[in-house]
Length: 407
Image (cartoon, rainbow, N blue to C red):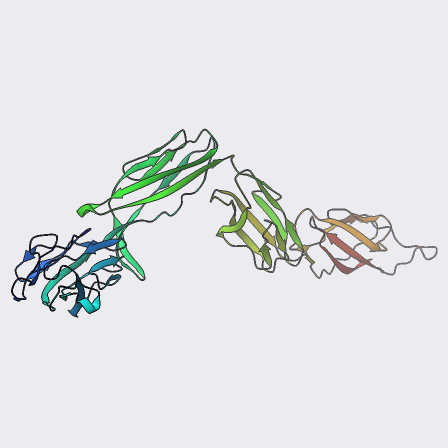
């Protein structure tokens, strides 16, 4: 009988066991899975990296089919009946399956001269090592004239479902493409510099780790005009419990639609940040709140504004019992308030003794004149009731009805 060899693409297999005269199928003990003791040891795979291996048989009836009789391949790999092993390993580990190769008989589509199935069997070793994976699927956009820095990182991956591993040391390089003018890429994986020209720049980076592991990733760095923020918020802005508050923000430059967020700290309870960058609501808690508002464009550029919002307690007036005044004697007292946002302005409704007034700062002063009900003047004490109103810088107001006795 004729003997033929099945040519392998990336190859692997075998050793002879069958002894039918002139047609015994066998495995190749030298390449590409050389023998090591009783095993045929195949090329190692890496987690996350495509793996292809064609098992190889010698002699027999020239056409073959393959199967596992015990054990199997590492997770993520599979073998078809033609002995082709393909897939992407999903976890580290080692398997030692038994593989059987059969002659393909005429009724199975084999050569007509094949008289019988002279099968052989051998134990293999398949090992999957940690793979190297570049973590950046994209890099943030840059701005013309603004310093740029982005550190690329790699992971030594031991599992894909879920992704597990540890940071890996790697040597980095640019495989193809070009960087923006003013930007460089270091062997440690750092993109840095100050871009000088707008545009979209596509390039392929490669990370090479120990043991021959490597990974490549196509990145695009888009350079746009710098982002600018316009805001009604100042470094320190004041608000008050229960008083409606609104502050608008807008962004320009960059690319696409902006997304707004509070990237650090938090807003006072009662206030929310809208999709258009506006902050609105009515604060519910007094205090000093430091936070950062950030606008991020469609290409991951960001511009931030640091703000401190001071929320005052709700404006109120103390329940005052005014000290008595004496006719002809200078009188001076300050009306007291709690909370609110300075400055306060004061107004009065009602009647004060002649010679007295309430100033805009809440100071009640003057020299009351005696009331005349006849001649000579009465010696009885006179009582005056009036309503004082305080209005703060945010338009909040508080009222109190007070009584002043003039003796």
